[in-house]
Image (tube, rainbow, N blue to C red):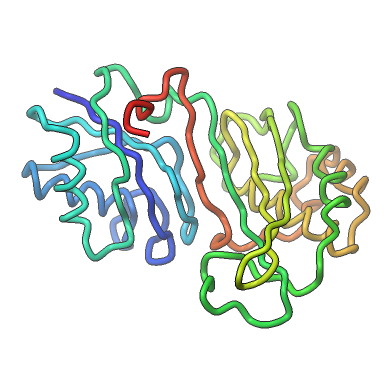
Length: 258
């Protein structure tokens, strides 16, 4: 059966997350339903990561197996037609080897978290950024973030329902930058790792926001990490500022299309 890799963009607001669910809409379910429209029957797709309810994606990656050969342009166009009017789009489609896997072949995930810092309520970007009122201290947050880089036991920063076999992960980078937009100042948190624990990014950003707001000293982030206790974590920030921004592979399957 020919296998195809799909790069997928979506607004997570209408969905209960990526993973297919019986009684709630999901991104996986939407794409599988679109596949059933072009090749009748049941379809199961695998993704690089399972985003939670309300989390968005700029470049989620999934793969599907079909019964016949498709031109990649025609396949992406057909899927996008059947995905309307849902806020889900196939932005790239390529044929891959039958043993290529969206999840297990990946060697890095990248997440973006957007924070808008202004007094006025957010209107145009509502549901796409986390709105905080106090001006955040970028340098203090960067200092706190340094305690989290590298291999650590991230028990403090993972959900109590996380199903990962181990809390030990290697966080390759946390980049924190300021950006001026027409709507106001934004702070972007960019995190890179081979894989993440459930709620790890939101737990880290929520904790660093406390540092930026002056409620925590940067060294308290190290103390929270070393506690290996979920109760030591700062607030978990809301999902709507979070984006799965990209997935890397030893050989980029989409390189020829970009």
